[in-house]
Length: 128
Image (cartoon, rainbow, N blue to C red; front, side, top):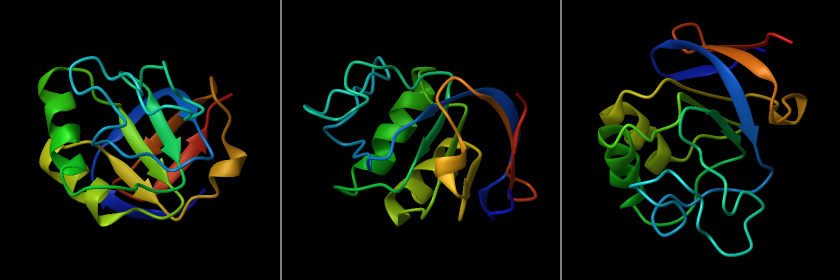
């Protein structure tokens, strides 16, 4: 799937997919990588070491720094794939050096599926 490069990098990993937007500030524990937003369909799940796939970001500009804190704590996602990249998430990926791509049909990706994110070229490829 061809998308748009937000921040460079190339990784292969397991997808964690949600159809709900994510707020990193207040919605994700920066020390554990666990989604803590009440009622979110990923509540209780860890984004650490996964390729996080979701429509877009939401919430406070502090969300950029939560992504940075996740990276420093080694609890960040391997990469982020969005339908539409929110500026807060984009800044977080850039300052944290997390590969990121948007303009992707996220409905074609399933949780647990191994995918490759080649953010250098804006390409997301299912492996299995």
